[in-house]
Image: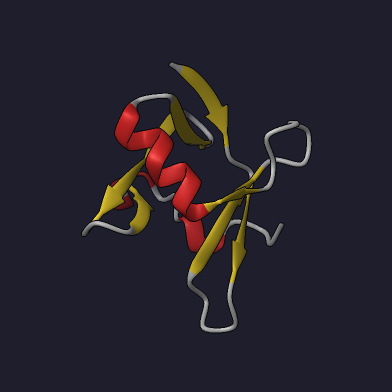
Length: 81
């Protein structure tokens, strides 16, 4: 499993996450459905780097991506791709 740092997110006009991005990486941008598949198959591990720690991105309710809210990191708060 390869770790992939996410620094940006693509969003639709309703604010829903559509892609994960890191402009410094060749895999970026990655469609949300592809990221979900990667997480389910444990092909790649996606995370957001906080001030003090890394926070994993998880699948929530089947087809949504989220991170732990206790860390203060939120995918919605990342800059757009």
